[in-house]
Length: 352
Image 1 (cartoon, rainbow, N blue to C red):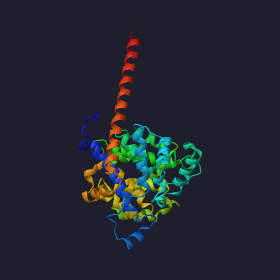
Image 2: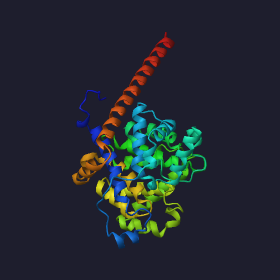
Image 3: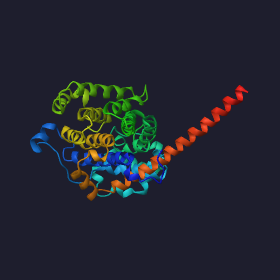
Image 4: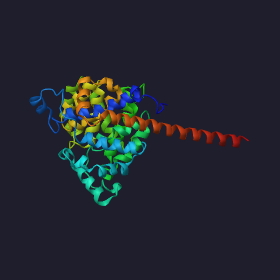
């Protein structure tokens, strides 16, 4: 276990956290020009998207608000804590990038502000990826604990998605668990994919799990990205939804692209950007997963330098989340030691 005196920035934990945060912003920015587009439009107008300008959209803003809530609560933030950050930094949502936010987030924010009951704010919301695209910090502060990451993600995501769109909570849980698994020193593409589905609610989350498995099966039968993209478009009735941001579309596609990229960061985010549909969110999520797996060193320096120069303090966000993760891990360890002491004492008294 790391101590708070450790040089945080020299650790693998920090490298992975920074890789996850940078990866999400880079994917978000790369996918922005192609958002909502068909891949044929992308080919005709962009050729192949392999660079970016800007520092992301609503995906990145919502993620930063969640990171702040997690730091303030020692890593235990839930929907109420995230809601508080929305209210405390209202202009993060309603400022210069308001037009980048999906309607559900705008509506939810107003409902929170008027009624002050976060657990009711999601009623009536449409399906989206608004929770899944922002959930990576939950994976970071539960590093190496994918089950806990999934459980916390279910709570956090309920701020935006409940009831008939609660499958969006499954999407958030899948991404959070995948990110948490990616922090294990021996993590692999396969172990991340397994964690993304292993901790979904077995009955309630069965639809999302089936859709992910179907997308991964298609990816496994394709020779490369373009073959997969063509096949997914040809079978749009299986892989696409009327709303391109529906997490039943974006999460399976994200994990399929993660599998196809096989741990290569540049491939993962450019695949997301060049797929089309909800490309900024798909590229953001796959970038966060791959960045966590490879660490910041897996991202080419030109992209890292560009984000750090014009971004929103990604290095500080990563450091704050790592320090929070260390504190939370120490809390878990202390609880475990207390339980061991209690159970040992109980066992001894029974024997006596």
